[in-house]
Image (cartoon, rainbow, N blue to C red; front, side):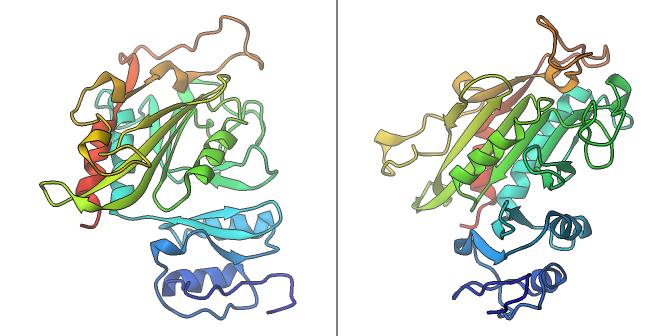
Length: 312
């Protein structure tokens, strides 16, 4: 094992894809000695480095050369690969973005609500460290105060000085539900983040439905700024931690079931109080072009996207 400051640790049975290995070599020195083989889903979380500074980590992320993987930089300098993109992850991210874009009423240019993913913000609990989400929803700068000074403001912005996201979505496949929960809660340390939605796909079961799709449990968690705890939904085909039988179906078996719909007020996107903390009774003002009162996310549709996209 190298004694220099930047070290990569070999873990038996864990390999990085060729392109990822090439890019990680730019981050972690000396060059790691790891076999050029694909990284499998069962490998996560995979520790790939230690004693990496926030600046080095940020530079690696900004190059965007290893997209398709999720990384975690811990306060002790360790770097982990915690998740990887796959068809079901990508499809759910796209569907979530579609749900939030409904409020724009078909507007394409200069939309009142910006919906995107993979944009960098500053980690609210680690000074100078970048952090990204799968989906971020933020107001058009024409409808809120622009950041006056660089992060942390006031008011805070993203890495490029645009308005900070107000709604965050994190989608996890191989990432543990505990890690997902912690990341969602971490976002709330920034008061401008009003809601955080976390979605976790659990391991596929060994039996299939009539369409030949593997049964699967799934969990959704909704965190709200200033509200203790969080809401949770068990929305897969079967209840998490229970056998795959008719006695343990989740009940999420059709669209438009109120118990399996997540409601987030649209005005949360425009949360922009004149002062922090916000005065009692403050209510965000929604632009007149936005007529939708709530975002409605149907968990059955998310479930079906996962079942259809997963490898069967």
